[in-house]
Amino acid sequence: MKKNELIESLKKIVKPYIQDEVAFENLNEDTDFINDLKINSANLVDVILDVEDEFDIEIDNEAMEKMLSVKAAMAIIETKLSEK
Amino acid sequence: MIGNDVVDLDIAKSQSNWKRNGFLDKVFTKKEQLIINNTADSFTTVWLLWSMKESAYKIYSRQHNSRFFAPKKFECDLNDIQNIVCVNGMTYYTSSTISKENIHTLATLNKDESITSGFFKLKNGTYDIQHNTTYENLKLAVANQFKVPVIKVKIEKNNNGIPFVKYKKGNLSLSASIKQGAVERTSISISHHGLYGAYAFVN
Image 1 (cartoon, rainbow over the protein chains, first blue to last red):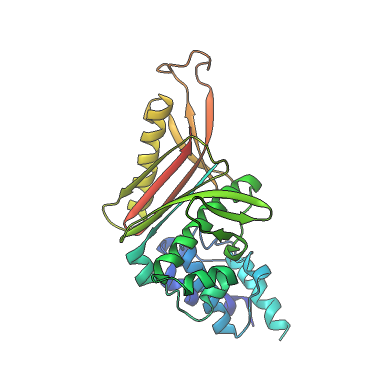
Image 2 (image 1 turned 180 degrees about the horizontal axis):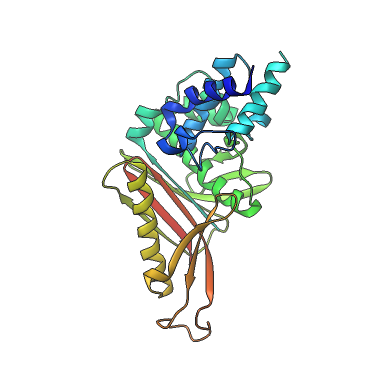
């Protein structure tokens, strides 16, 4: 999957949970889910579950620890997809 | 050190679904899931345990200046005398106030830590109101507690997004031992969710 496609998929996933429209419009690899998009931490669980559903992967506890930014999420998705 | 967390139970009900497949397994240990399943009010217990984990995480992340998302590592123990949260050999003491509308939890590193905390209802639940009201209330409380003018109180974040408060001891300082203009820092914690906000700091 291409990088920009992956970012677009992530954008769709996080959309229901964001609280900062400007940061969402400018979403890029460096965007932080909590500090930039203001997603509340309870909804971060939903983001992780949605990513699992969308890509049909399992995000283990170790990977989940790092899931705080677009960049980290992309790396985790790419790794898990390559292991399939 | 101090950590706090607020849960607006109406928002928790409408914006999160703890019964969603996989949710409990991602957040709670087997032991915690047993507590949740065996209580009459599973919903409130889910969010009580969540707020204990969140407030303990806030102290842990300040101690280690690191951010991560591992709610399951923060193991809660509920009992009549003192609720605690354990993670990697550390223990944090928590106390929670629970009403029909909200849960407010404070976590401390030491049992007898002297802290100032505030909890309040917000005008509305937009992010700007939540954020600005909580910051303003915290600044007023810090100014009051440390006897400095409120305009000299600044809230900043370090490179990991962890907030701290800075205040300048100026002319109005009552403390002669601190030289004029000296900057003091203190560890703080802020939280807001839905219609409720809270702050806490070490005195």
